[in-house]
Amino acid sequence: MFLGTHEPRLDDKGRLVLPAKFREPLALGIVITKGQDRSLILWPMQQFTAYTEKLREASRNDAKVRSYLRVFFSSAFDEQPDKQGRITIPNTLREYAQLDRELVVVGADTTIEIWEPGAWREYLEVAEPKFAHTQEEVAPGIF
Image 1 (cartoon, one colour):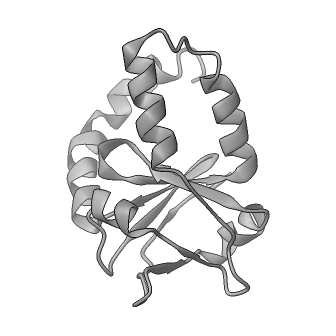
Image 2 (image 1 turned 45 degrees about the vertical axis):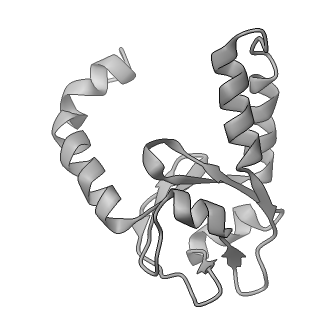
């Protein structure tokens, strides 16, 4: 489980040093893809594989499914963290998420999201006020 918010920087080669507590679960490899809201999603290889197995159940006769699959898989890059826990974020993904040096890395349960700091702040300005009111809708009967 990935938790918390971190604010690392990209180095001159477009590499991200993963937060230390995230490194062990990612040691077997990762896949980085486009996410929603102009963010990136960093998947542990095992989680990515499980997600893609579910995607295979969707009908490719549906134009929306085909479109999603094309964008999702064509933007996916597999990566192996180096000994210092660094991964390279490809240029195309940095451009998509409008990343420069400053980043926000967000633990999102089984995945990690990577955001441009201004985009993350804008997202929270909208999402946080709704947070308490959506609990029952998102997790009915749990609390």
